[in-house]
Every structure is written in structure tokens, then in C-alpha cells.
Image (cartoon, rainbow, N blue to C red; front, side, top):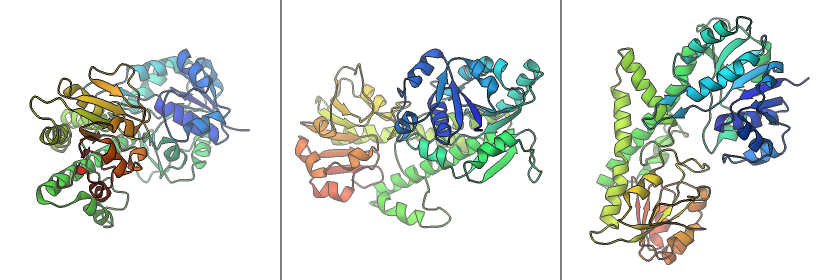
Length: 431
């Protein structure tokens, strides 16, 4: 008999988790408020992820607003994404409400796994809350570190490098207390499982994002040096990755700072955690400061190359999503730029997934990448969609009124762009 899995929360993480688990042949029921459940029950996706639509279409996954469906599950996974506020601080109110709704229906003898993004200490506090409210609850509580990467979520969920599990007071080297239902589920992934206590798992999740943020800051510092000296980041990156101490998958890519919200959320949490515990927070402060300053590169470049006093040029803009394979515009550089260009330039924008239903004054939407370029004084590229990399630079040159391209995400090939007659300006490349 197939395991019965309940998933609580149908934002990005919960949709991906429930669809992927159902694709493994598991009996999955996903619960959330009625509108979300009905939309997904009709197989209408509210997010974009490569491969997800096909996965959902062929699954027997059930969506419901009836939390009582959780009572018959062997494992309940809480997978509601944690939202962030304007200061990139976690707002846990929606997660707390979802857990409150699920609480009466959690299986007394099953397994409860928290997969939502939470600060260090949350799971231990949740354990105390569950026991005080449900004295009959014998189910063990685990923290299952999510590996959600927007645009790669399906692949990463189905084939993870490893799974990190937090459990009650698990000490290094101590034998784990195994729950057959959880062990059977984890075995399906065929990857190493690292077990540790709740706080270690929570910190490990944030530590991964801290490492990525350090890598981004490192890449941006190198990019500044390349631009100042005539060196090239495109030349450096393959050589750096060939060093075994850095590695072929190293996150070395310069840009305009952190976006999307998740990296910033964990950095802000770690900074506040360090300060509250009397630990050194200067590295975290530096990363956040350097990230905020990176946007200045884009404005200075446009002012030098395109924006002239008394002039109001038309610009083409490729990319509104904060990264490729996403509809998310959380902390999107493109939306910030549109605001800063108001009254200074007219903009025609194109994104394969994001459509502005009510564009700001002076902003129009194009139906294709080349259509956005026609008659524009310059092209600005702010999202690394594969579609953009495939456009012929000669076609871009023919469509533009003037040959300026500001590529903030390094999506075009510099040599091909310059050979086509484009004035190509990119992060980490000498102009």
C-alpha cells in the first residue's frame, strides 16, 4: 500500500513538493485555503517552473481545503513558503495560521515534517506548542531543509544532492531515532541523509544561503577590478572553477546584487541572530551593504552611455523577472529601474513570463525580444533567460536605432555582440 502524504500550504514550495511526491507514486493530498485548492485542482498553475505543468497534469494529486484529510496521512509536510516584508524580514504569521488550522488534524501516531523556511529556534518552539495543544500527539516533529531553487525546483526536488533532517536533540555521532514512515519516504530519493538537531538544520539552511551570498559578493568585487584594469570576468570564471578548492559548480557570477528575497531574508536573520547572541555580524553587514550598492553600477552606466541632460531616449528592456524560469519580481532590479527612469526615458519591455497589466507611465510591453528593440536608443538586459542568449546579435543591431547594449546578467556572448557592431557593456568587462 502506498504511503499517504499530506502537504500543508500551496505556495511555490508546497506546489512543487506535492507534485513531485505524487510523481513518485505516493498518495498525496495537499491542503490550503479554498481558492488555491480549487485553482490547482483544476490543474491551473499559479507559478512557473520548467517541467511542473507536465508533472501536475499526469499526477493523481488531490487538492482540498478540508484539513481533516490530514488525519489519515502517514507523513504530514508543512511546506508553506515564508513571506518577507519590505526589510527582508520573515513574516511567519501565515505559516502560524496554517499550522493552527492543521493542528487538530495532525495524525497522532504519524510524522510531522516542517519544510517551510524558518529562523533558528522556530522548530523547538513549535514542538512545545504542539505538545501543549495536543497532548495526545505522539508524532515526531522533524525539520526537513528545503532545497528550492526557483527555475530548477522540480529537478532539485526529485534528485537532491542530499537531504538534511533536523530532529529532537540529535547529537553528532549519536544513533538516530528512526521513524519507519519517514525512513521509507527518504529512501525514495536515493541520496545521503544528514541528521542533526533542529537548530543545526535550521542554521544549515541559512548557512547555505550565506555561502552563496559570499560568492556573489566575491564575484562582484572581482568584476569591479576587471572593469578597472581591462581584465575579463568571462575569462576568469572557467579558470577559477578549475581549481578544486573552488569547484566547477561554484556560484561565481557578478551582477547587480542579491534579488528574489530568500538570500536577503536569511542574511537579515543571521545578522539579527548574531547581534542578539553577541556574535560578530560584520561579514553579514558587509554583504548586505555591498549588495545594496551594486544597483549603482546600472544607473552610472546608463547615465554615461545613454541618458543625456535634456534628452528622453527610448530604451528596450529585456527581463522583468528577478531571474530566469520565474514569474517572481520580488526585489526585481527591472521594476526599480522603471521607477528611476520615469520622466527620463521611455521604455519598451519584454519578458517571456512576466506581463505588466498596468505598466507605469512611459512604459510599454512588447510581444517579443526584437520587437522591444525596434527604434530604441539602447538595449538593457536584466534577466538571464535562455531565449535572450539565442537572439542573433546582428538582428539586435538591425532593430536598434543606436548600437548600445547594457548586459547586466552576461547573457550575450561579448565577442559575437561586438562583431555584430554593438557597443557591448557588461558587468565585469572593460568597456
